[in-house]
Length: 352
Ligand code: TTP
Ligand code: MG
Image (cartoon, rainbow, N blue to C red; front, side, top):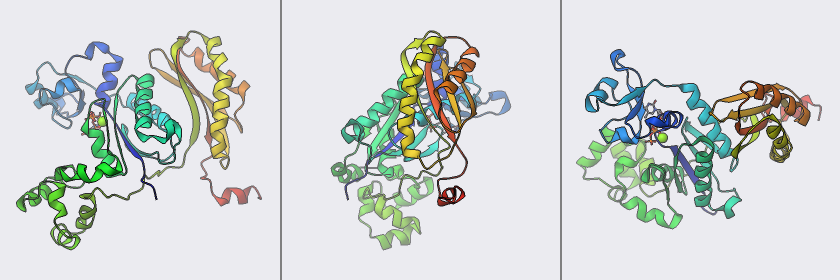
C-alpha cells in the first residue's frame, strides 16, 4: 500500500487575521480578540505583533493589557469567523471530500486520491493556501505528511504563512529530534514524568518497549510506542453527511454590476453539474446563490428546487444582488440535499 498524503491546514491568528483584514489600520498594531478587561474577559487570540509582548490565547485581558498597554482588544464577531470558515471548507472540497474539521480554522485533509497538481500533496497544499488568500485575504499554514500526527506538527513548524513537508523517507529522521511535548496527549504532567526518566525526545522514547511504556503510561503507552516512531494509522474522519454541494469563484476583478454577474452563471452551473456527478445518489431539495460583495459581506439566497436550473439561479441572483447592489468579488451556485443520508433506504422509498 502506498503512503497516504495528509494535509493539516491551520489558519494564522485566525480571528485576529479577519479583524485586520476588515480594518487594515490594525495590521501593524498589537491586537487581540477577546472579552473586555473590566468584565474579567480572556483573549481568544492575538496577532503576531501582540505575541512579541508575550500575549497569548486564553490570557486574561487585564493581564494582557499590563504586558502591552497599547494592545487593542476587539470583541469577537463569531458570525464573521464562521462565514470565513465555511469558505475555507468550500476551497478544501475542491480538492477532496475527505475532510476532518478540528475547529473553525483547522482541518485535516486526505488528498491521497486527489489527482490535481500531478497528485503532489505539496503543490495541493500550496494551491489551497494561495486560494484561501485569494478568496479571504488571510493566510494559512500547512503541514504535509503521511499521517495526521506528523501533518499537525508540520503545520506549526513554519508558522505563520508557511508550510512544511515530511515525506515518508524523512519520517524517521524527523521524529528522532522531536521533543516529547509535541506529541498530542503529552501534557504537562506526562512531560514531567518523562523528564524524570530523562526522556526528552521521541528517540529517547523509542528505547522503551511497548510493554514498558504501557507500564509507565497506562493505556496511552501503546499509542506512544507508535507515535514516537512516526506511526499513526488514524483515518481522516469525515463525520458529517454533506448537506450541500456548491461551486464558487472569486474574480480577479470585481464584477461591476448585475449583468456582469449574470454572464458568469452558465460556466458556474456547468462546473456545478460536473461536481454533482459524484453525488448522484442524493436527493436535491433546494438551490442557492451565494454573493460576496467587494466589502466582504456575504449573502445567500435559496429556494426549493429538485434540480439546479439556470433560470432559477438567475432569479436568485437578481434578488441577492439587489440587497447591496455593489460590485461582487465572489459568486457561488449550489444545491442543498435532503437530510437523509445516501443509504439503501432512499432507494427503497423510491421503489428501486
Ligand atoms: P488557534 O489555531 O489555536 O490559534 P490562531 O489561529 O489564533 O493562531 P495560530 O497562528 O497560532 O494558529 O485557534 C484558532 C482560533 O480559535 C483563534 O483565532 C481563536 C479561537 N481560540 C479561542 O477562542 N480560544 C483559545 O483558547 C484558542 C487557543 C483559540
Ligand atoms: Mg490557527
